[in-house]
Length: 170
Image 1 (cartoon, one colour):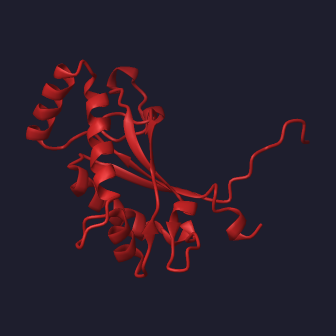
Image 2 (image 1 turned 180 degrees about the horizontal axis):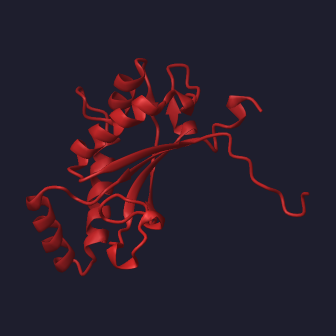
């Protein structure tokens, strides 16, 4: 299957860990209390608001398009993203399944920014190949998004060539 037929399924996820700065944590607790939310819900809303602001183009390194352009070395237009959540991580960034002692698991709902390849466009309006986000670029993205969101950790993953299994197929 050619890459152009996969662009609707291929994607990059940026999973955002909990807040890393005390002032931000205090602010989130006040916000959560004021709006009758959990701290994870308040953090998720903060991440979403910041991401929405990064969708707006500015004249400096302030938008997703600018960030993707700088990292890939060519003009990239970020058309959209969506917010999802991961429940597989502990608050310290470890996968829950890898923590043997259940008492050591700190349940955490991690907000994640999902960028589908169909929404990451080159200058010709074509979706970029998500495989361009190799391991080194993903590590750089992790570092940058920890700073942007003042998060204690971040993970960047890609998914490509996904093929669904049809029912009844053997």
